[in-house]
Image (spheres, rainbow, N blue to C red):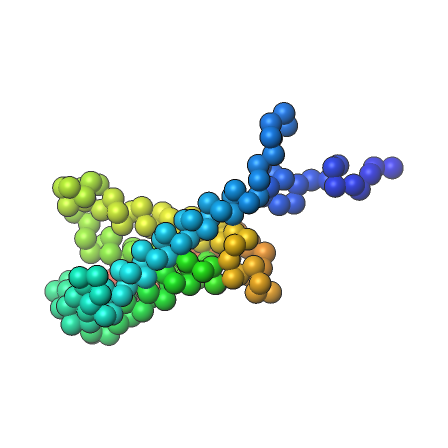
Length: 189
């Protein structure tokens, strides 16, 4: 009769799955520490970016400056859009940094950055030539975090519904970001 001991069962977590025969086991803490670093860096960057829109902090234009920018780019109700963008970036960034409802927080960042990419796209990759390498990197990081989940060093670890991240949660969040960003872009004049 086959044994049901942990050594003969299939891996059930990312740490066990990352173990390669003949090599040292990958620490689950290393994986989670990497996700924490990525979450905090992306989340606080976006929160600071959103506070530029909302409050004019860090040299930002505040609601009035952001509203003028959105109006010039053809967005309807530019003041409302400035508030929505600022709240989405600030709230989504802070939520991602602490890891609360992380797939949705990443989707908020993904959606706003897709709009930023569409508005600033010049056909060039490198920023020195007016390109969008920065926006593309933020989009990739947000999508990656939505798909992988926040890791064990996150508030989500203590929330029953999202305690164990599933790829379907991340995929649904990415789809939500794509649909929402597309709807906002279609509303532009």
